[in-house]
Length: 457
Ligand code: ATP
Image 1 (cartoon, helix red, strand yellow):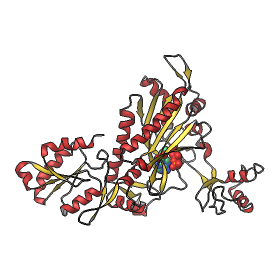
Image 2 (cartoon, protein in one colour):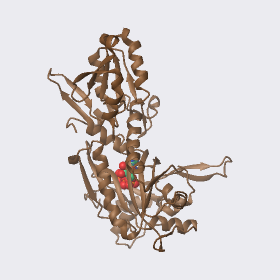
Image 3 (spheres, protein in one colour):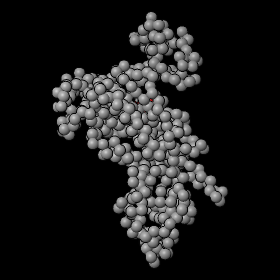
Image 4 (cartoon, helix red, strand yellow):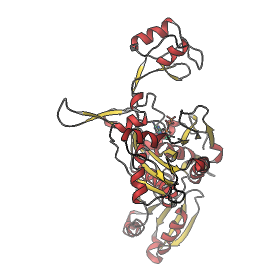
């Protein structure tokens, strides 16, 4: 990653080069929502495709689903999300750590005072009166209490007063748990097997920000591996390895990645770890791998009344499978990939070019077709028509060739093909490599194979 990169620089590049625009920009924006532009949508789709290829297509034991965003509200009771609706949250203004106000009071009074029945005002007054300090940094500098509503609510039904509350899902994985039996039966799947999904999640985050890092609407790429308890730690470790290999294969450098094992586990969890990436804002979670025990299937079994047990056809053992979860945010990964790819390169002539060194397989456009002069555009459009059947191609005939190269460097296009007057004579073109800037001459008929080879993943 280029040391000179700041989040502001990246946001500007994204805005000016069609990666990402501020959501609802002409209305002054809408906090922490982002729209992916023509270049960004290609990059993100390529990342999602690469993930699907590695974890679904190339894995005989993994099946994909695309579950509904709106789920039966009982799902959120079973998952525990419904209960955390009204947690009163306070942030420490000094160290930015966040706490539940009721916990602060109860811990301070050593359990003598219960905040259960206190109003927000009463809790705030209590904290001021007892000068309860931040357990992390020791300062006394609180934001007001805000009710933590993780899930976005909406309603279903057309008649006012008779509407039912439904929620936008805060995580995609419940779609896999509720389809465990469907997938097992229809695919004749034998445990161990995994169900994977890529889809949108919505979280009413209290502190969103840092561009794509934390938004209120984002995409998750995740899978749930259902297995016997005796195999579960092996799968947990395997997915840790597979997860880090995957992000490295997309170009994230080993030095910018690390495992972070969780000290504090949810009561049902047996192990949990994040892979962190060294973003310009510091080391932060990129993805999570969690050993969730039998919690999810048992809860859905209890709440739905349908048994989620599996009968092993070989051993005749009946058991509730353990779940290993591997989950990564598509937007957060795209941010990491952009950070890693960014370089301000000083050239031999003293000029600086900004170049995005995306792995060719995920680069938004694979090739740009650039006629040297406007009167070569017919031939150039022929080449475009041919190559665009196979690859995402850009076409640009405006401005000097140097400027057009720079623009392609900034959006990370691995190849630029220039059409010149020789092309009309011998059907050859010049193809320029983004990283080395070297140019070679190729036959138009050989372009497709040449590019295909470079973008294999
Ligand atoms: P964090 O601690 O950063 O809030 P989390 O532990 O709540 O994340 P998970 O619920 O495990 O995250 O979600 C899996 C992945 O989804 C995260 O590792 C991250 O890549 C992504 N993700 C989670 N919340 C957001 C968000 N608000 N915006 C963008 N991506 C997110």
